Image (cartoon, rainbow over all chains, first blue to last red):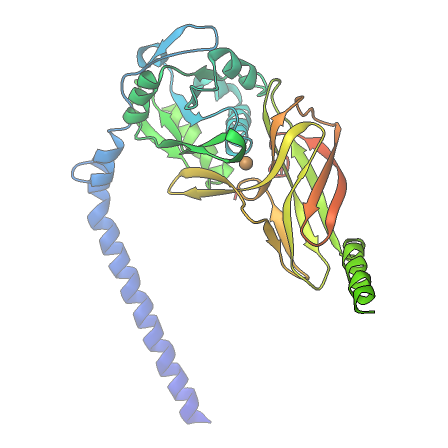
Length: 209
Length: 151
Ligand SMILES: [Cu+2]
């Protein structure tokens, strides 16, 4: 059936033409957008990113004041949660501990910071006991509702106390890990859904810059 | 006569739980910090029966309450809620309770959950009735420690 053969060959040529067209369009788009993304110029995402972070003042489990200035000099990974959270909080903090181990000698070149957004239940001492479960040092912080409001606003974090049956409540909260550089400037984020390989690569870039 | 039939039917319904075929594979509890007041448990709920069942909750001597909760991520925000009306387990189907999703929520822990220990847990199903299990307490990142950990 030569007619069908010819038809198929023509179709194949057409498909290749389409592939080439799409590829060159993509290349053009990438070339056009890339330089703007790199210098942050008029990229709205870069502008937004630069607004993460800022001044805060909280207390650690020993009752010491910890501010953004205290943390300066070393990059840090910041996570918001509550100690009554049985799933996302412990798995995220344990993942940070594991990533730190994987960084080897670079592992102690960044701080892990946990901020409790449940001031009603989580006292500084209880946060300290909670964090003792993880086999790596983690700076646990909390503060008055006003002090928490300040850091929550600085990092555009969401949290909401939600009552459940039995007079109990849970806390909805942002589960993103914020990576900040040694000057307290936004570097990147680790999303909950992100695989460990990608997380490790970002952390490596953070501590080696 | 009619009464006797109804009584017999009632007795059959009462006995039905023994016939229901619900099981939980690979169930475990996550270890907690000393002083922790909540804990979580997971496992694959399998319904080998020919009718839908519902996991309503349960009990354990180590906590005041045991509920079924869902966890969802929405735009980077974690939300955890009690599953109301029970978690449906379809006939011949299975539902995974796993980190980042449905879980058994232990509220009001009376003691910390220590790795390697076994904890009795009774699950309450709408049809199958009570299912008694013994759950092993595992590390925080149990099931995520493999080279392909993550998603
Ligand atoms: Cu829960």
